[in-house]
Image 1 (cartoon, one colour):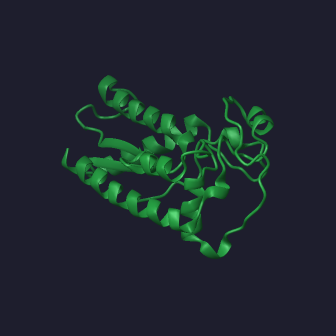
Image 2 (cartoon, rainbow, N blue to C red; image 1 turned 30 degrees about the vertical axis):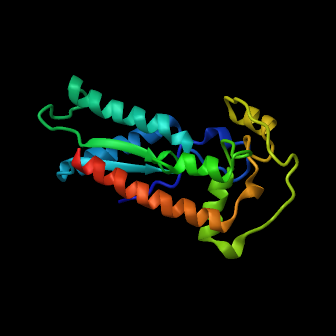
Length: 191
């Protein structure tokens, strides 16, 4: 299916080169995609997510689609059923989080994690760079907007030490994620 390479990431906008969509724009695009595929007979749509900032907005899009049918709004034929939509984030697939904690009992964190970096190192081993990190493990905490994110996490890391990553860990993570993804997708198709 199609890929969507720009998501909801307004919290990263204090980092030059970042791009984001407003949540309402993201919801509108997902609704249009699902409605388009519904017209062609799709009954189930599986969204594989790669960014934590998209989770709530994807769920909002699904809620809006279901409200369109339930409430009969926006000119949608109430006789038509919206496809069953589900989203799964790769790092939340069964067994993946546990593997991350096994590989990185300390310093995994929530952004720029060693698991994310390891997967990238596995995919692009010729592009691995080692840079000193200060502090080794970044601080953790909450944030609400881009300037606050940049102030609290100046290098973008949240609670993580990506220097722990290795391409070998990335290979293990990819293999486990593929296996879990196939099982999750099959379960979705058969449910």
